Image 1: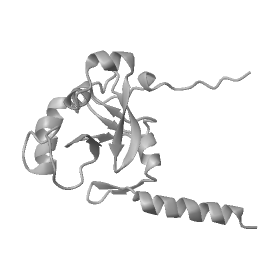
Image 2 (image 1 turned 90 degrees about the horizontal axis):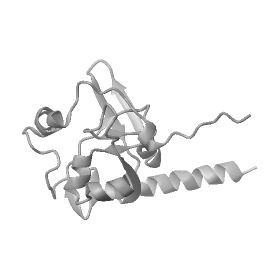
Image 3 (image 1 turned 180 degrees about the vertical axis):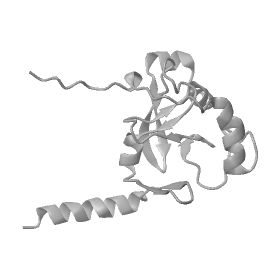
Length: 163
């Protein structure tokens, strides 16, 4: 008997009791950018993580146990995606580093309904490497550039087909 259950994006939950949308707008924006209110603001500087017709700064909370990446309804609304559309389909495709990826709506009934979660699907899509320095309490994520990913995939394919 097959007891495998498929996890749906709307079924996932994680307890984020100490982070809210207000924290993203104020405290975390202040810490990351040196001023409040940067979260969801339009930008043309640097290399922001999320792009769809317009560029906005999005702050994600990394959860390596989450199989999916989520954005709050507030983020979807900032990109012009209405709640009515999200009721029909609670996800949308966004260009992230020139790659189209499906991003799910943070479930309203979850403990992270008003924040954004960076999950395994995005990390896997970019062959990301997570580095944690426990001495300095800093973590970095290295995203492999698309061209480098193709070279790595081609080299891996060549290595596996060589006898």
